[in-house]
Amino acid sequence: MDLTRDANFRVAQGGLQALSAAAVVAGDHFKIHLNALVPAAVERLGDGKQPVREAARQLLITLMEVSSSTIIVERAGSYAWSHKSWRVREEFVRTVATALGLFASTELPLQRVLTSPVLQWMNDSNQSVREAAIYCIEEMYKHMGSQFYEELQRHNLPGVHEP
Image (cartoon, rainbow, N blue to C red):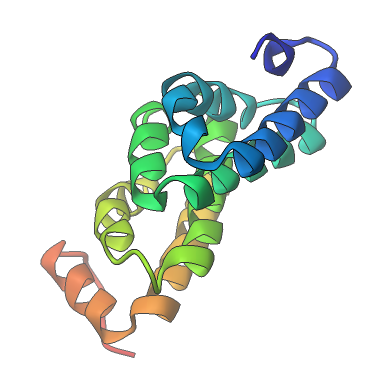
């Protein structure tokens, strides 16, 4: 775990990649470490180096594969939804969009967990976060279709029209 916090970006990247590989090999036995791994991965989503951010995103996706995407999104979201760093918020919403593509057909609760926070990010002060939120909403619509449209109507958004 200390390697993921290293100031040298290559060391941090390697540590995150090693944890992803260990999660795949260990499977269910790795779940006991989620409480430490998830916050560490979320923090590295805000790293200044793109390779470290990509490794953190991949670790979160791997943890979703090993565990449950809904559980990981809820745990990571508790840190990321209101994180002070716009980059963490942006990268997390991009991770969520990737997760939707991978897990939407198998984990329906995932969309329900995401709708409200992603809609809130459409009003984020940072344009990159807003754009990532729009992309995530497009992914949600792609996988849920008219069900997602109905969900949007429940949130009383101005200008929601049926496509």
